[in-house]
Image 1 (cartoon, helix red, strand yellow):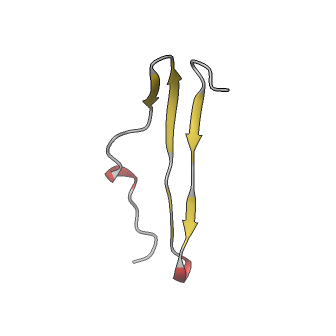
Image 2 (cartoon, rainbow, N blue to C red):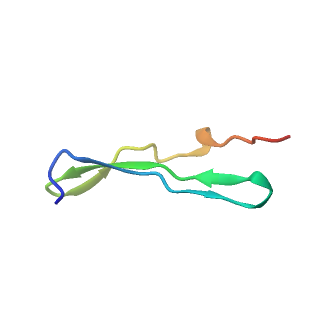
Length: 52
């Protein structure tokens, strides 16, 4: 059961061919009106290239 002030964290990841992969991470705060997204809305600062 979801209750107000609970935080839901979603962290699905996938590994692809050639040792590449991605991770999606998002957090939500449960409120009586629904959920509020806690993670930044712009993910460009999290992009990183692991190999040159």
